[in-house]
Length: 308
Image (cartoon, rainbow, N blue to C red; front, top):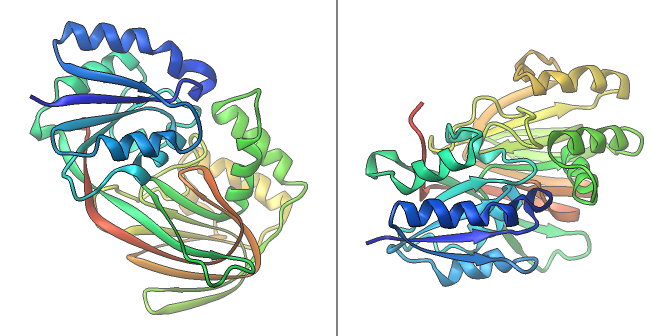
């Protein structure tokens, strides 16, 4: 019998993680499943817990937002055959947009606990090998399951991460407004699909999933199980033009923005002339990124998905 391991971030979603625990107990007991609820107590705690419970007898359920899920993904042993699911109670909840979940937490939980093998897909996981300014001898790794961003959206993520009052899309939009007054273009050398791109850009968005930032569709054609990454490159742009272009991402029409170039690839190499911000699944991984090599681990983990 499978055991469900709930990794709960109690402060996720401005405290929604803590509030949902009684519901988890109620539904889990009602369906008679074997389960364990473990609350995180600080940064990287979800990674530690996920590592401890990584085996094919467990199903890990990440209870939080994309940041909690990122920690879980970075802790899981991908060689164990473990199954993963998500109970989205965080601020952004972008990854679950790829899984056809509803907005009803109880409904999602009941579905997860009653799923069978027909509801399981093999999801790809991205990995970035990167160096930072004045640190070329040290290689750092980080996984992402939804999205990686370098440039403007990562700077927005940095500002959003430090907002202790608002949450969700409202918080992200406020961070966008703040970023408009103080962002820098990134000067890049990029290699992908045996082609080379140079020059000043607004941002680079690498998507395994379709959206980030609580609902900005920067990689609208991405699929989490298609064995390829979606690469969106946004050209240098004025503040005025950026203000008119960003709403297109909210209504999933970024392909109509002429400054956006969308392609697909399995491997990307990037060098920044001037170090800048990078995020993985909305979490700021570096604030002085120098080089990055992004690859994809195909079909890396089993994930529970609703049929569309």
